[in-house]
Amino acid sequence: MKSSLQRIYWVYLKELSSFFGSSLPPLSLGILVFAGGLLSGILASTGRATYEQVTAAIFYIFYILTLGAGIFLAMSAFVNERKQGTLELLYSLPISDLELVIGKFLLNFTILGLLLLFLDAVYIYWIAETPMYMTFSGLLGLWLVAMYATAVGIFASSFTDNHLISLLIASGILIFIDIGGYLAGLLPTPAREIFSYMHAFNQFNPFTRGILPLQGTLFFGGLAVLFLFFTVRVLESRRWRGN
Image (tube, rainbow, N blue to C red; front, side, top):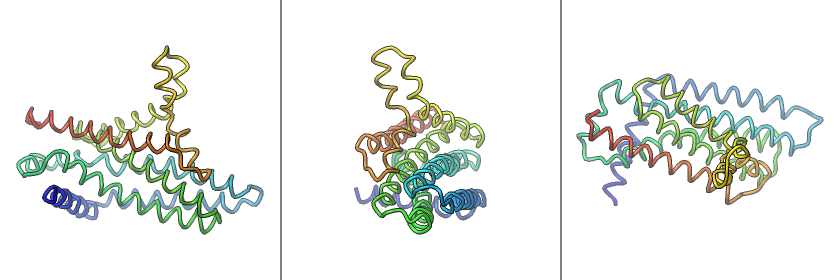
């Protein structure tokens, strides 16, 4: 167990050095902060809306930005490895596919999670003057969304060596899951009951009202675990095929 954690930590440090060695990820985070700050500042300065309305609107903006930033940061997780020819080197090291995936996931989630903590503290708690319980529940919801989006981005990156294709795959998955609930009425039972829960935006909504819903927590957490598992399976199949 200890040696496995050490290998995950090594992957984490490797990804951290790669992150600061590239200009694209920091630039994307800078755009996220600017966009989130600009829109949140406009909403927070509105005098006719209550703090509940302002808080919900800002959280919805952060929700969309979190989805975009999550897949944008993670879509290069394995794309760069293939383009640089380092994936075969990683396969030769005593690192399992699960350890490799977890290390990459933790780095991307840590960076996005810290950024969301900053945005939440500044724009939700300080500027919008939202009560602490709503600030905390919304932050937890955003962290869960970040886990889910990051896992989807890593999963998409395991298929290709092209950044655009990876981004399109990840975006397609997120869009499908977000509108899946609207399609439920068109399906027969039991598919209708299953797809009725596949509406990510509705699952996130209670977090913006100061509620910690078990269903929403399991929804986003379960999807993150599911897509990380899928990523491991894709890597295992490619390892055996030699590509």
